[in-house]
Length: 175
Ligand code: 5GP
Image 1 (tube, rainbow, N blue to C red):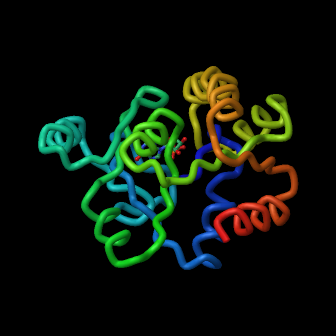
Image 2 (cartoon, rainbow, N blue to C red):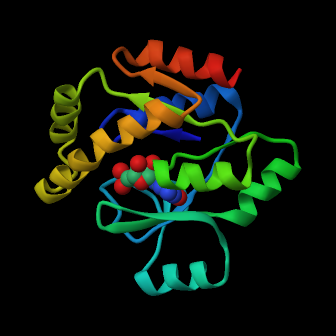
């Protein structure tokens, strides 16, 4: 699992790591609205609150969590199918969900991507320009908590200062 605060550049790392490692990406369900360029079924399964409730009630999610005022969850069936087929699956999920998955699957690897500093994280988050001011504030508020949690509990920490270096480090960890 790859976690990291919003704006840390996680998607850029994850995209290249997926390409080079051959791992399969777990497409999460979310109640948040698509950002420009995001494709339903590829980046996320964009669902209504009611549909998310159904997925939870039917036990179809491996884990789920609230983040920034929206819900995000991992559909269980595809992950279990890929693992049964001997493939590695990469989950891009936040800390609470990562801990839930680890509780169920102790072999799961928890990797966290750190920003060089909180100031730099804020700069990147604003520069991205696809997140509302309210969301930026909310995301920054949880970032320090996530970082403290990751430092205490995650298996690996990688600082995304230089993108290529971060990609190289993640690939060697997943090796
Ligand atoms: P974003 O809205 O920026 O795409 O994602 C916000 C946060 O939700 C990120 O930290 C991302 O890793 C996390 N996230 C995405 N999918 C899931 C999921 O299925 N479960 C959990 N727990 N977190 C997720």
